[in-house]
Amino acid sequence: MGQIAASYGSMPDRIASHFNAAGSVDGWSSRPAFAATMTALHGVFFLMFFAAWPLLLRTPDSLINLPHKEWWLAPERRDATKAWLADQLAWIGAMAQALMACTTRISLCASRGEEHALPGWTQWVLLGAFLLGTAAWVAKLLHHFRLPANARGEKQR
Image (cartoon, helix red, strand yellow):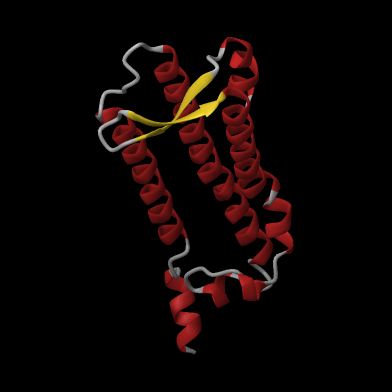
């Protein structure tokens, strides 16, 4: 959002807002429409991933889906589990915001250039990095919420 505010005055009147698979611009927006759309998207991501964590702490257990839910949401572990989830939500939110910031930068750079095209790999590298980060986040989540060895004995009793 700061990037948009800081560069608004120097943005061209027409801004690249969509790229095809080869990295060529195939959609344009006006400066006000681009700024409003990107600001709104950043705001939505912020609300979803950062400002929503207090809601997560109050979310009923029935609405939370995670491995071995009964064990992790037992009364003695519930608060710690929800706090961990809230922290992790901030990490995935940071990755989403970084992707949006890079996308905004690419759009602004493409709009100021004469060729109106990006190297074809640019968007794929960004998307690949985001997906790799998301996969690592999911792996961390699954690893964290595996059933501990001492819990397996409790379940068999």
